[in-house]
Length: 217
Ligand code: PRP
Image (cartoon, rainbow, N blue to C red; front, side, top):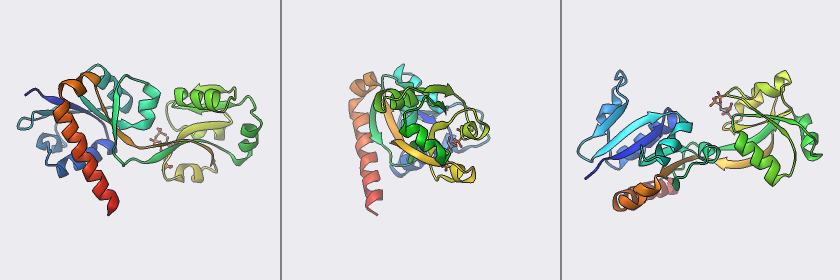
């Protein structure tokens, strides 16, 4: 039996995924040692390997087959546009991609003004404004703390993730439009899906059953 390799998004998504896998009896003791500098962890018994990666790199590892399976946010899947199969909504990490700004910017959106849009997600922003809204805008790619952009006058609006809404609220900003809902997803390399179909299908089925039973409670 060959190893199945998982690429998990570092941070909360990885912890939540490992908790879920543990409930299915899939553990990786090696990964629990917080002082370890190891980059890849193995479960010899189940022939599984796990590694942690930055979100945008997860679909890349999966497309090239360096990982068979990945866990990553839907935002990153859309933005990266890699050739991977999205097989399961894991039900956690729920949030929304939104157009946000000062309340006063609502008018600019309504009148399809040529505005500036700051975002970490230029592809999602472009698709939303150009293809869905048919509004010409100037998109400015940023790398974090996007909420600063309207505050300091870099852009009229932002396209960003809203989870609790507290970052917006504390900065006097509001959600102006919703682009799409988001959550953590499982992705699979298309060749692995064919070659390791039984093992991967079983994992998806077991996870789906677990998610359903959690939702029913
Ligand atoms: C994300 C997102 C918002 C914030 C939303 O940023 O970009 O800034 O979380 O969360 P809230 O609605 O619960 O306040 P993150 O903390 O990932 O860092 P970043 O600003 O560097 O992208």
